[in-house]
Amino acid sequence: MLVSQNKSSRMSQSLGSVAASVPTRQSKTMSDHDHRASIAAAIEKLPQWVRHDLSATDAIVRARAEETIAARIKAAIESDRLVEP
Image 1 (cartoon, helix red, strand yellow):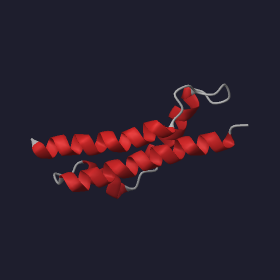
Image 2 (cartoon, one colour):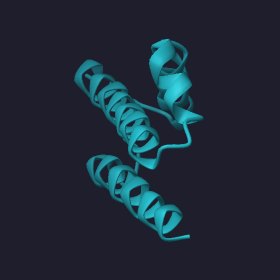
Image 3 (cartoon, one colour):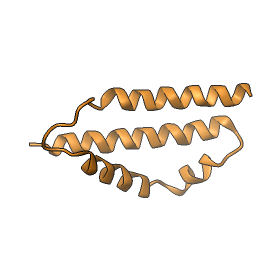
């Protein structure tokens, strides 16, 4: 039970850092749909080790995969911001 709570806490922190970097309101030039497409593309490009590690029984291995996914989502959103006029 404690491992599950720690994992949830780490995932919340990882996603919290991603959420903190995303503006609360989208600009007029970048729609939610555009971000979803970028995020979906980032998820599709995940390496096989990340996909495998998400199902690992070891909480540390799963946390590493979750942090990798959070970083890739953050990078996709930041990349969208760079192309905005």
